[in-house]
Length: 183
Image (cartoon, rainbow, N blue to C red; front, side, top):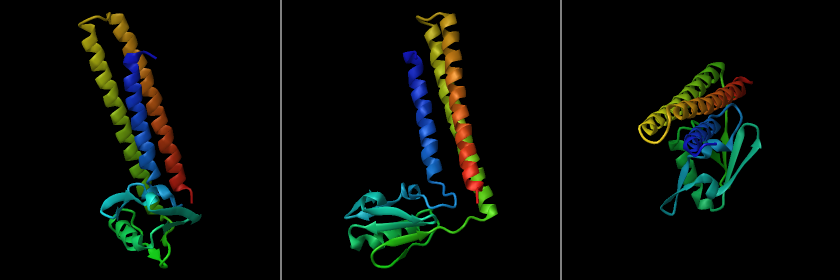
């Protein structure tokens, strides 16, 4: 691949990876430890990811269990969960914290699918903006050392890369929507 195209391909790949990470945080009826990815716990004055202060497991399909290595952190972890946007009240038995995910209602599933589609659309807009930046950069090259035919080729190749990532975003959106709507 042309070095001038590589940087735009990399940016589009990052957009896709960001979308995948975003989708991992959306819960689809099953307990997914990734909903805790953005959660930080105050660990001796330092905001620390939950995964680094305890063992996070999924013992059943709709339960996440957090076993902190330091039992004194239970209150801190509970506080972090309560103040987050997870929307689940934690319960603890003094040793572990359990998050029980309720079954999603049909209406909530539809809302989640709308959210998934919106995030996909935002991803596509980001990819198209990267394409626009690339095309602008190529037009500037035309004023200096590159022929118009070469510019046309670069723009066509960039369009192919853009189409590839748009397809991948659509596929990701379909897959996540199907996962959410599956009861």
